[in-house]
Amino acid sequence: MRIVFMGTPDFAVPCLEKLIKEHTVVGVFTQPDKPVGRKQILTPPPVKVIAQENGIPVYQPARLKNSDSAEIIKNLGADIIVVVAYGKILPVEVLEAAPFGCINVHASLLPKYRGAAPIQWAVLNGDKETGVSIMQMDEGLDTGDVILVKKTDIGENETSEELFERLSVIGADALINALELIENGKAVKTPQPEGDFGYASMISKELCPVDWNKSALEIHNQVRGLQTWPVAVTTLNGKNLKIHKTVIADGCSGKAGEITDNNKKLIVACGDGNCLEILELQLDGKKRMDTKAFLSGNRIEKGTVLGE
View 1 (cartoon, rainbow, N blue to C red):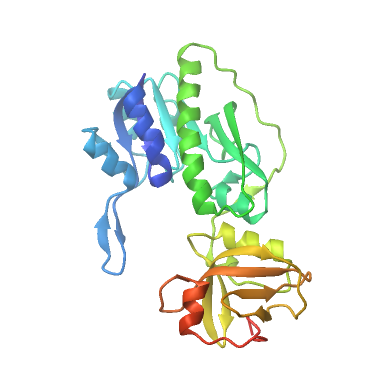
View 2: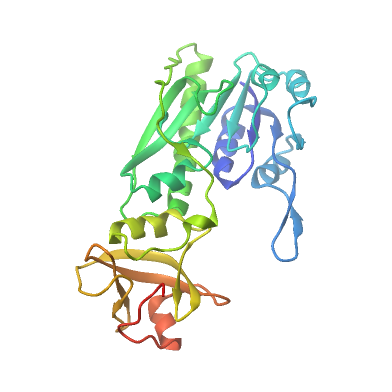
């Protein structure tokens, strides 16, 4: 099939690479280049890099509404438009610019977690299962008919970053399967049930502060879900301390946030009487490191309370 691809971040790259191998990608739409890092170097999106390496025309409109994007897609002779984490709302003229319309690779089991951050919220909420839905796009927010679903378990210590990587590959395989069904006229489009199934709002730094009065599992899910950005944070002796990796430890006695073991590891009591072991952490202005290396250069007294 002749495909116009719309996508931007790393998550979309495996899908684009699969499409290049299996189909004819006639054009790629992606977000404009953005300044990155302390030096604010203008950097192309990952999808643009792959497209240019493969000699595919790239389009980076600041907005789609009232642009000539629909006309470009028609002129490219696309059979279908594939959207993967593009980051823009598609107007109806774009949705209808190809004979088979637009399909979207969405990283949740629709209708659950419609919205911008389905992977992070699945981890933050402690879900044990997630997956990828291939959806025929309509004018609503992730409300279109579902064509195909691929499910996968979420590991108890798996971070959102790790899940991103896995789902990007699962999504690419599911996309190819869905396109085969569409091309052969065998796609069954299942309407999503009506109702409020949870909106996956954008992740913000307001989610970062750790409340040690919560259960060990809730805090562990917070740490996992906020990797690699914006990262769970507490305070240690008045300084901000990022927590990158934890595991749930055996039960222990102590007030919420209290360090109950500092012998080459950090065990912290939580509000439910259970504990977390901090495996990787980072003080403000310092490098991320494992706990053993951190303790060799930072003296922390047993009984110290985090978050005070």
